[in-house]
Image (cartoon, rainbow, N blue to C red; front, side, top):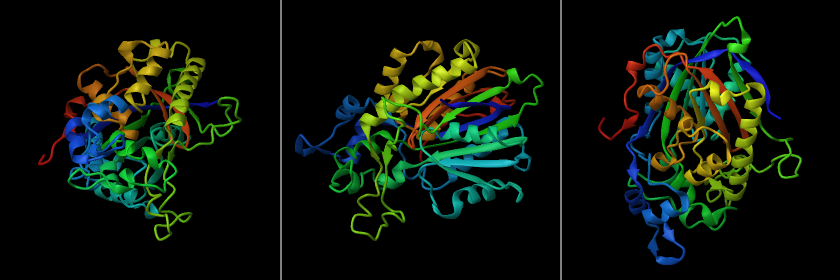
Length: 384
């Protein structure tokens, strides 16, 4: 069972950045993923839509060639909160695809680029699709006034080249334990960056504060087993365990999805999130304006929505348009909802997330963004 903790913070700033969606036909034509049933052909956009449910995706290795989009999102989030970098006490970065993997160099660079005070000790989280809830759980244990959470992933940089072709590790790999379906990782995962400002609320009545639940499910019963052991996404190469220089190191350096385990964990994990939120915040679906579910895959999300008793008007989806944006998926929906005034000041929103690790959880927080006019379209095209 996930442990619920008080989350005495409001979301006071938000911004997200994604590439202008590329139609899946165009993406597939560039990717050149071999069709196993017809070796002389490549998968078409129609094939990918049929298998994964995507009609377009955020994918641009030039735009996401550096931490620039993440820094840009952070600056706009600060502007929407009406504060300066010097007002931030804590920086938490969340990514599964760092630009510089050693010694938390990404977090250090973001702090430097933003001009955060030297007294701010950056915290870097290496995590997948549930990373935002892990950050919220960490924040619940901290005593700070304002925290900046910056999240980003650029699969286009590690799964393909600048022309859009997909790396052979994903198309002709025979070593990786999920070699057969490795092509689905670049087809599904997408580029994005986002930032949120969390500000302490100082509400006397704790019942009016936010709340966060989190579980790594190492000991939570799943399907009769004592815990859920599969990490869901497997990338064993390029580490001290399996270095690049080893015989299989490079071929094992690919993101492989255990699709059956992912579907099982998503469906049961999201159901547990809903049950646990309902236990600690009865009728939460009536109390919140929106419920942001992780956009793992359009088919899986739609299956869960059909199973769950959640109001359709409160559960937006965008997986068909952007693909799986990993940790950026839910902040993007909040950005768009604030821009369109679907969410306004003093509304409450809920996030329910599951991801590799495995880990899952949820949080509820009030929205108090004082300068929503600072938000612009999250879409960025080359040349902008």
